Image 1: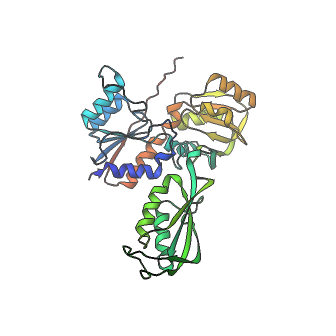
Image 2: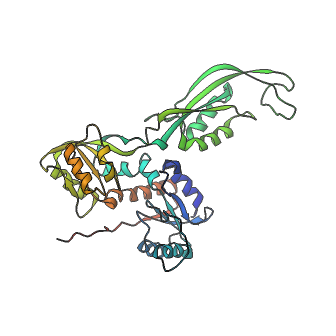
Image 3: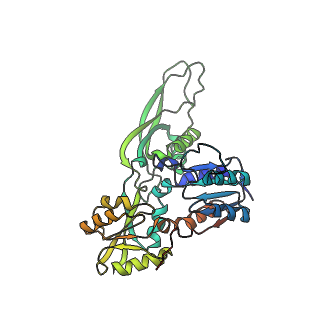
Length: 367
């Protein structure tokens, strides 16, 4: 059974909205037609020529990756340039490419949630807030008979989420007035006169990333011909979205033992460790991928920081602050998201065949 590519894109963006991505990023569909039919998907971390060969061999119609295939605009379609040739070969093969990158780093249940789970962290909470995960308050006015319908519609579309609670809203009684014009078709009242209507002021929180879908649901569920609504900007941030997470191990370990546990959990050949190996650690911060540049931003009660791509001088600065660092590699800290994406797609599209491809380590250790 095949599924429209657009439906897969919508599901992925319901999980990791494109607006969560950083401005420099290029997530989404880079190759393909949203109207195409997809029967088999290959999920990977990075789109390479080996991935293309695997997708062709498997008969996949779509590759879903974490790293986008196209990050910079192609300036020419020259086949003597390896990356351009790879893009053209995907087009020739009729295989679409879709990526969820920094939007999936930020989204709840994304890369850092998978990393924290792989390391066995408990009581996780956000590490770095993100500006693009802002909130608004949606206010509208609904007759009593339709409050439940409107509430369920907008909350099913993503409004009203506060922590572990959903369908959070507030309503209060009031009176609305309106004078229908000649071309109007009012839900109640009469034309040519000022009408008074008993209404409920209904309000709920909405992540900016989900506002478009929530408004669409509002308009579909609301009985009025013209829906009156307000969108109020807030200082609140979507608590489910953050760059990185912090959590706790079930029990304290020495840094050396924890580093070995990280290596085993992530299935990498080695990790790099900065800090005293006998120091005991329990409170852990994680940031998958290239989080080495954020070392100096890690604040609060953190005993060790697990990330990738840590530079020499940043490691020295962390040492000076007394913060141990474990560099498990860019791919090593992100590879955990591949099976999570695959399970997400299987759960949403039971008839879809979904395959995973593990990433080979970019660098080999020579001893």
